[in-house]
Image 1 (cartoon, rainbow, N blue to C red):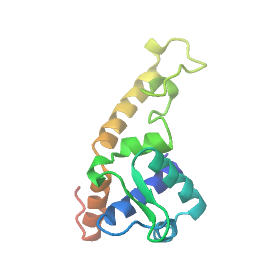
Image 2 (image 1 turned 90 degrees about the vertical axis):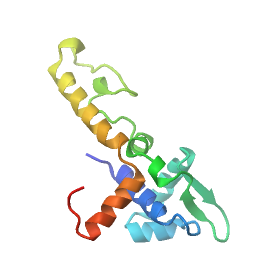
Image 3 (image 1 turned 30 degrees about the vertical axis):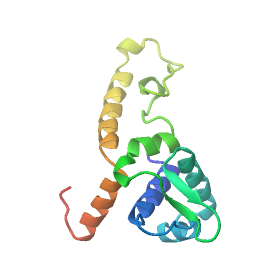
Length: 148
């Protein structure tokens, strides 16, 4: 299941992506518009800034803006920054691998094999979907285009 942290990170990036040609957005505005607890959002935006997705400006007229184009921010990268592994079991992870404690033989483990397939299918979608794509999907859903 998608964590609240990742969901809120994506929602904040979408809000900032829609705000591209405008002044930086303040945390309080993002929190209010996206229904995200402000304190939680502060930590999320800090993580996203440290990962290079965001630019922050202090002082009057300050706030956050995207440091990259929305089409260059892939969901896979957001998820890895906010939650770490994409795989549902550690032995199927590409970047956070470790052997399961109870595993006898990974080479013949049906669970690992099935969840490598799940990981690969999930990675395909997440590496092909950007913040710009999410914005486009929202726009299409608002005008009633269902087939994406």
